[in-house]
Image (cartoon, rainbow, N blue to C red; front, side, top):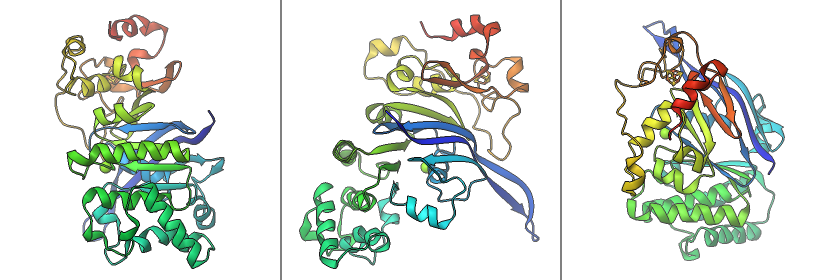
Amino acid sequence: AAKLVQVRDLKMHFPIHAGVLRTRVGEVKAVDGVSFDIYEGETLGLVGESGCGKSTCGRAVLRLYDLTSGSVRIDGTEIGDAGPQRLRRMRRVMQMVFQDPQASLNPRMTVAGIIGEPLVEHMKMSRKDRQERIYQLMDAVGLNRAFANRYPHEFSGGQRQRIGIARALALNPKFIICDEPIAALDVSIQAQVVNLLEDLQEEFGLTYLFISHDLSMVRHIADRVAVMYLGKIAELAPRDAIYAEPLHPYTQALLSAVPEPDPVLHDTQQRTVLKGDVPSPAKPPEGCNFCTRCPRVMDVCHRIDPEYREVAPGRYVACHLYNDAQTAEQTAAAMPA
Ligand code: SF4
Ligand code: MG
């Protein structure tokens, strides 16, 4: 499949100011050199603990921020440095479903108004055509047309997320970033919303970046998975490969903490409890950003930031354990049996 999204060395650094003069005293490296591709029609899962930069990364890819640096190509168009006009044009191609439907829907607008707003902003269409399109979108996400003139507060959380999804679909986008789309919902309806997203992907040929802290959920929905730690991607691999055979020590630790329904599978992996806290992204460690907590840390890790590279077809890792022939033995030892 073709690459719909290409992100290269994306950085989002935010200045920190202090004192009455608001002097710049440093910066938070929320996203610090991230690269990945997303193929047409696939779901790339972006996982990591809260504060790792995954939401910021998603917003930066959609250019909801001005980037510190880096390149983002979507459907052949560079948007990393795009001005308002090109961005406006690209809004039709790329959309976002937000975590909290409560906060992202205007409480004073009706469902029809919310879903139809992008149509008003971006498309020249008659009132009648717009009404018909709104009904189609409500059908597509499983909302009763009779509710078109109701307000968000009259709906449950799951229904509100359906409104958010219908709105995201209004302009017929190719690429949708789902930022923790079910995290704020009752567990009982999370599966329904995930299933809806999967059905819509198939029906409309959508490509997803699915951001989540929930590794079990990502395992269910993603074709490939990227694991983020402290502003960088630690590892990216096809879904089955990363869950069966995580390479990066951080991925190994994360997965060892996931309750495994199959006790036989669980036996093969030791539970790793990471020491210490995640360092502040305003003061990341020298060398590898995981070196303060890594169970396999070596001398070199404190000095040199490991390169993020393809170590096997489709498998990307940033870790000295996998870096060159000299460490080939360590690599072999690090591969789970
Ligand atoms: Fe651990 Fe070193 Fe690999 Fe970083 S580079 S993950 S500290 S082994
Ligand atoms: Mg988040």
